[in-house]
Length: 190
Image (cartoon, rainbow, N blue to C red):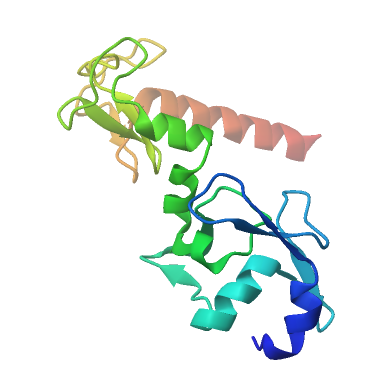
């Protein structure tokens, strides 16, 4: 994106503000999103103000970093800031974990809610990013049932193995097929 034609219009909407970071923030005073990011209309399309500054210096922002979506992190934590020194190109996951979010707070935890330490031996995965305490979630070996729900024994002659690896009682299966046949005949004769 070319910033040369934007300079007067762009910088007219920026003010210097010392927010306690290493260098002063350059705050966008133009229109902002509901999340607080400065935005500017270019060629009938809204673009984030901080992205315009970053692309003017470093070129186009890549779509992905390390397999994750590429985003700009405001190191000063001020979303309206357009100071190039306060912006860093990172993966979206890194940006989330650096912020003041629930995900960041959970990732920083070293112990579960009952006080067990999260160690590689004691930590299980829950979903894509979640983790669980294995001490709190003991794995009990599941014993296979010996009889079906109607009380028929699972013997090699009475057990049907489904394509997905499950077990069904052949006696119950035959009864279900007979009942369906009776219902079909009753419908046809009515």
